[in-house]
Image (cartoon, rainbow, N blue to C red; front, side):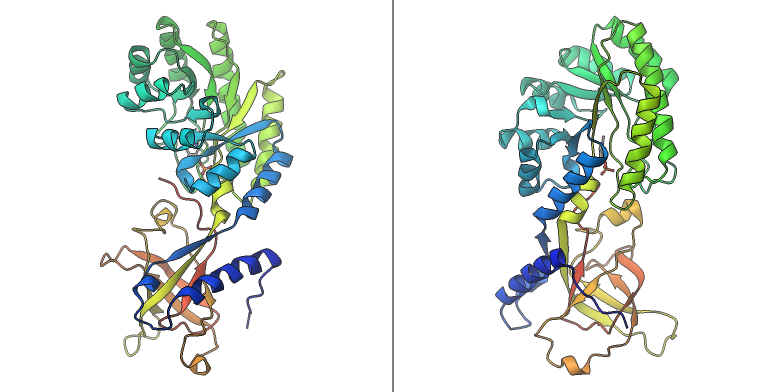
Length: 379
Ligand SMILES: *Cc1c(COP(=O)(O)O)cnc(C)c1O
């Protein structure tokens, strides 16, 4: 049987979890316990930033705020000289209220509301993105002084979340857009792309950088001062270094004198920030039906709450047990591996966190479950 042995960093998190659990009253009827909680790991963010700096030293990260707008996370990133990718006016306002200079923000949404364009420009945000002709008309009318990155289509077909279906202009269309931007006397200053979240195919970067170079050259030929290449997000914890290596090589191959390089990493920074703790509120033992079905656990959070990334990613969440001193008869727990399906609290049968996981031991009502890497969402 596999036992959970925490590393030193994990032990700090576990001590914080235990300290939180101590605050609950000893009664099982405490409503406070029905609210799942998070423990945040600042050190993890510093470590991720060090990885970024050593693998991509020439690419300035603009953290994608939508992945996790926790004020503590944003402040730490700001202090480490990370800039910000904001997808909405609300995010822009949150970052500005921290005292961050608007020159450190990119409004990286290619399809913005008119009000958002107007207010962002009034707040002196300088940089935004576009990928269609109507957006150019809006920008021309509302905020012609904005500097623009043309978002081109890019796609890692193996990515967990494809973004190319929604945004990005094909190279041919990009040319037409550049001509129109020229006619409207708008300021296109570079190119951006996003190969998809949870990407794993380094060739997606190679192709995207090649296409970006074509569009760069075309922009220059029209007289634009093309200065910025924004390589987007999609970086994952588990394959970051090889993907970064492929990206660096592609840029070096395509661009003899590299432009200013920026990126929009989200989940790479945010995922490991939160460990989440939920309580098991109910359980169904599948007796007498068929022995094939795993027993069912019902938690106090699910796909309509903190597990919402499941909708887009189809991720399987595997928790670990936090032993609570409160389970009255720990001796009666069966310490052999058990199969479970794990469910959220709503009445929707889609609200299934994990179809089947194997836990190292029996799980009981009142147990706490620990879910790691719950810091990064996609909304
Ligand atoms: C979501 C998003 C990001 C962050 O993506 P990750 O895969 O989390 O790195 C960056 N840029 C844009 C435009 C996005 O929509």
